[in-house]
Amino acid sequence: MSTKGGRKARLSLALDSHTRSIKEMFQILEKSAARSDSSLKKVEWSQVMKLGDEVSKQATAAGILWSGEVPNIKQLEENMEAYFNVLHGFLLHCHGSTVGAGITLHTSIRASAKQVVDTSLALLKEAVNCESSNSSKRSSIPQLSGCVWEACASLKKTPSDNYTAIGRAITHVAVSVKDVLREMNELKPAVSNSSPDEDDGSGDDEFGNDLSPEEMIVAQLATKSVSCVLLALKEVIRYVSNLLKLKNEKNESLEHVDSLERLLSCCKEMGTQANEFGASVYPPQEISLMKASIEKMYTAIDEMQKVFDITGSPDEGLLASFKELESSVKKLESCLGDSVNCEMERLAL
Image (cartoon, rainbow, N blue to C red):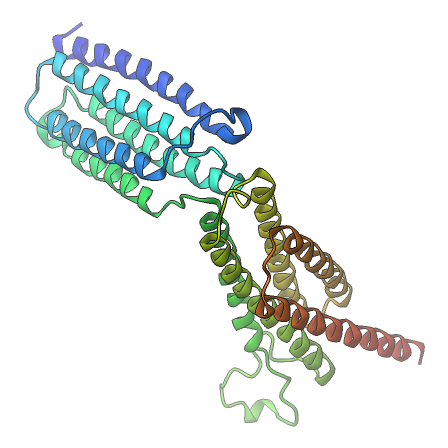
């Protein structure tokens, strides 16, 4: 075996050992510390970010060392060991930060930690693979170091509490509903009394523009309901933000965290049904699907109000938005009933 080959084999063995160790350590993030060991003291996210800064420094040192002139193998081994020691500490801090975390916050923390670990392993794997190569072939190492820096910098964007994590998740739902609403607002009735020769190329025959007057009424009422869903979601986001400002020991209890998760679940269900409304109004309109979505929307609204009873402090704006949503859905439901009756009468004739 050549000297270069022997160096690479030795470093590969060391990397494999460290990689197995860090992957085993990562398993502690499979579950929230709050669920597995309530005696743990919560680690503040600021401490996790500090360890992230240390990981960035290790990535910088590794990038310089491994991409330069061929160094002493002992230096490389020491660099690798120091890097993984910092990673171990980083993961322990991440685990400690999940004390009291609900599913949503825990998922965000785990995803951020995984990105730091994955980019670090990619950097060191490439470094070992290129170890016996010339300097030009090791040019990818600084770029991979940069990927580690970006992953560590993203820790600043990771939510550090349940309220923020839930609020952001609901915001994602609201953005999706806003997209649905924009598309529904572009629906147009069919153009009558026109011939192909009169087509001015304006796109009146585009998909969604051939709604009959009856279908257009349904579409308008469905659009109003989706608009009300978006308004309600915005009020829920504001409500969660206010809870964060007012948080106290009671609000930090496990029961309260679970209630926030229920709140998010309701918002996701409302977003799903809003999307179903948007998909069902295109001809031929899926009346039965819309009626099923209405029932699910009612269930989500009822569940949401139960959550408000637990979390407390719903203001008039929030309650009014749900009242308006329920009213708009009822109008749509009534219209669909009329549409079904009219269709049955036509079929009978």
